[in-house]
Image (cartoon, rainbow, N blue to C red; front, side, top):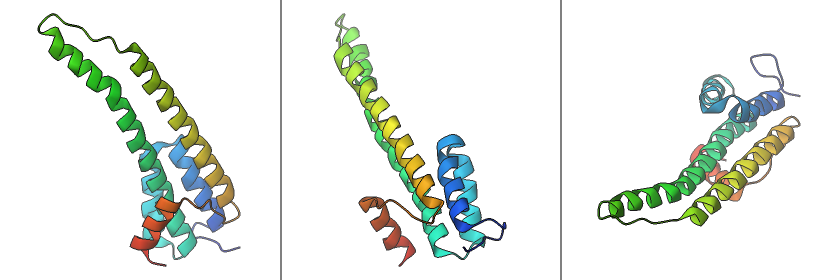
Length: 139
């Protein structure tokens, strides 16, 4: 197994980056990814470090879009409230909350599975993300 400059296997470093996005947040994962991109030569670990960040950001974008639903309803409610009206959209808010919970569960499962697969230098093919990485990082 190939070792990194840190003395650990590239698979373990990849797993650490995936798990850091899940447990340590985006800042820790970005710092680890910057280290990998600057100092590590192994192509697999470089691509997987970037993949961890992209997957995390994509799930964050999806969550933000879902969170816009209750915000738009609240904004409309304030505007209509100027004239004494009111919009009740409890059902839409509950649906948005349920969708947000599902996205968070799916994100956590995806990152855990990617981290476990990374231990053996494996990966889970995510078509959109992998095409993006291949396009901008070369193959």
